[in-house]
Length: 470
Image (cartoon, rainbow, N blue to C red; front, side):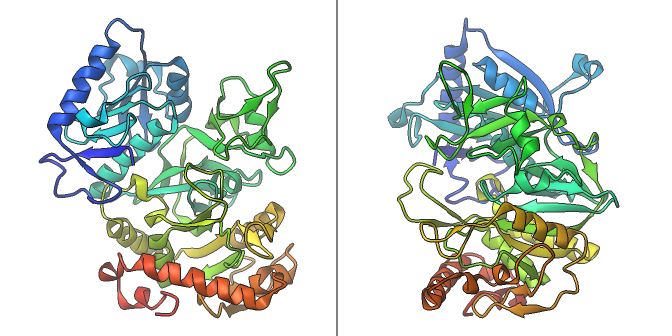
């Protein structure tokens, strides 16, 4: 609610205006910029010149100016560091000023609070103030890439990606907390990136040079590669508790669910050195269904893939962000990244549909959330089971397995999967109260239908038919 986009002639007709991209007057932006610049006079600042985009054809030079040294290190961790020979002639295409010590005056500036993220696509400038959350730096650059790249026939994606020894890559869409970073950091595959990628005529490429992982309750046994980064020099830790005497990290402390580690991707042993790979053979959409309704894995036909991409469903539980109560909250975020989508979601969905058809991509919906009941009754799906299902999808083991249709959502649910008990695959079987499951499934279907009303005018009839109960 603190993010705004300047309404100006060069971008006004392209931006998806609404709850995500709310307009801000150029005069107000200029006034904030002048006062922020005055605030910085005489202060030491930190500057990082970096690239966004591993593909040289589509990379964007960016300049990150910060008030604090740790934000500068965050930018250096998260983006691609240019070789020294590029720096003398480096000219940024976009600049981000991140100044947490400067606060807006809402009654004067027209902001919602003292915090602001102001994006001026015409002046190619982003102003961030009143917040120390480092994630706003990377989110702002991602928003800009989402605005620029579709015109160059590149699909920007909020996804992680990896590639197998056979050269077959996979992308993992998902909102925060659904497992993008965890599932893409697979020791048997090469990590391309954990959060932001482009898909061009040659394949996929990482926008970033680092990872920004949630580390709450991180397990050394289940996620050793990521766990190791929290003990490595140069990693930036946010919202993480440590013992004031021993300096030992306590990743189980639930002061907040939104704990983070920002580290250079080369901290992951099997990370790609190029940040690029060929066209994906598998596309996995991740959701954390805290209602315990959706199957742990389902195969999607092309219409279902388009529907679930536009829906962008997950569920959040108490502690993940301000304002959440004790009950799970259904969240629908178009393209699994609505806050970063500068253009209408249908632009990205149409491009994805074309890519899926052109490259004959297998699509899957994976629920990393609850089984045996909703949050508070059931339990989180074992990560070992989820990894087994993902491996089976990627190595082709599930391609010819018989499926049964979910009675409410119409999803194609595999009847067996190596390394996973059969009863786990059908979520209704894991609930003691079957009628309670049926009610929960119908209630979630209703939420899907309500959300999809915003997109019905932009999709074909076969995609409309996926809507549960349509």
